[in-house]
Image 1: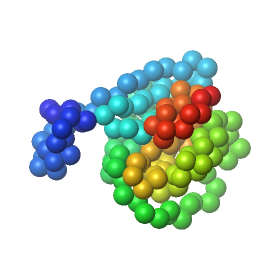
Image 2 (image 1 turned 90 degrees about the horizontal axis):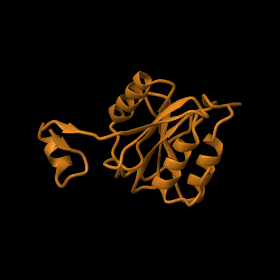
Image 3 (image 1 turned 180 degrees about the vertical axis):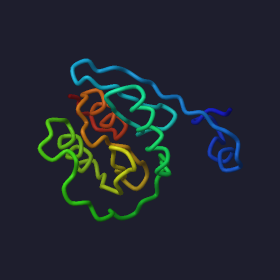
Length: 148
């Protein structure tokens, strides 16, 4: 297996060489959530109530054709009514910070996340974003100095 983030990993993956993604997982007791981030794939941030659900969410993010250098040029049509309507998470604050940095909504992911991009970098944003650690990870990946 070849590690994501090493030189030529994208080329090798396209040629069929198996690649491995390292995901750092932490448990946020305040939000009762597991949060997964990856230094090999900047912008990959997922959260879920269990490790099993987190694994499924990461797989769904990667199954969306996740590419940290997504070359989206125009925003997609945003779906009306998100899962987080009326929720008490950091989603609204995170997306407001992303918009200030020039990011826009690209698409709804297969799991409980959305893909946002500035045309150069793609970010996976959890729809609930209940964990401050997930919110901080998204802001850090976007280069926003905001911390929760």
